[in-house]
Length: 113
Length: 113
Image 1: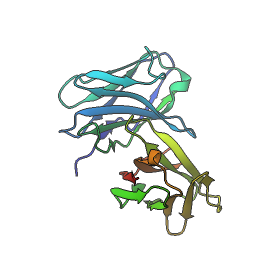
Image 2: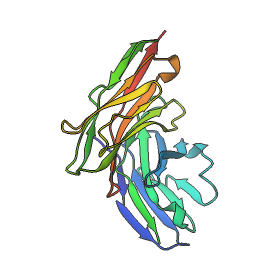
Image 3: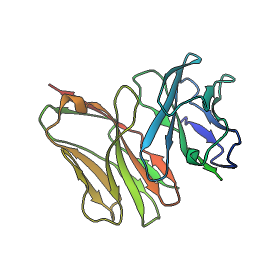
């Protein structure tokens, strides 16, 4: 069964550095999403992406964040100048259409030191 | 690796009736968290209920309650007095203290007037 793949599984970075989290959605999916979960807290929506542009974003998704589909398969989340509070699990998800169930990746654990 | 299974891709319930959504999981850990998330069409993730594995008492939140069977690794969600606004995708999720976080595939709940 096709699945959403996220790399790396764990990323450690120093405060102030930039990180890029990578996701390979299911190949025929058109809608892409990023969520994050800070340890012990609820899962939070960050951004949705369709047709090469952001369709919706949350208050969390400020100028520090950006998303990109650099080629036909990857979907990336870039975090500029990371802060300690950016430490979290970041989940990518994709769906075939707007109403289809989301398929989640296994997540990338980001640790900012 | 931890896994979460939701065996019901779709469920329906009559308004004001009760419905139970199933979730089973697999882990070798003894301490962990279990969650039910509701995802409306907006794709936000709304935390419905959370259970800590060391607590024997089933968590309850207004019309939502769980039946947590640790030995059977089962975590079902019961929605009482179903309302039209309860219609959504429901995801069961697992998190352990090693920060492994896994979503189930989801159950789409329809509420019939």
